[in-house]
Image (cartoon, rainbow, N blue to C red; front, side, top):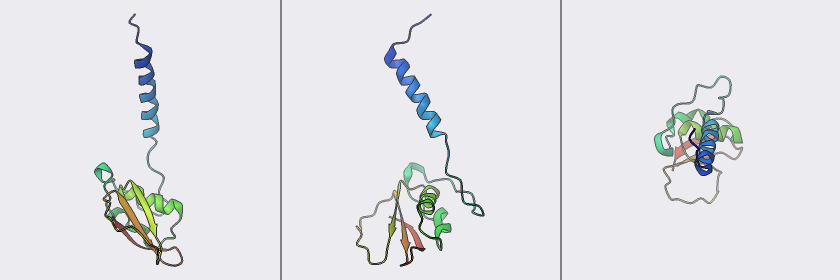
Length: 109
């Protein structure tokens, strides 16, 4: 029987655990919503699949679902009059909201 050094066997256990966590999938879509589109490769944002968020309240679950659908690494909610950075980030989804917190625009950057 071949012995495997502890460092290698420990690494295999960690890799197996990480694989299990990664296979948990995406959060379920709210009832009546279309299924999420495939995310863009490499965490790049694609705002088109997240357009269904327009008209919804900017709750944490709606923002996260829009982020997942867009394939973006991060999302931010932009409120009226809020000071924001202007640099373009291809991995960020921007959700513009009105004074009531309802999403009025979805775009990348």
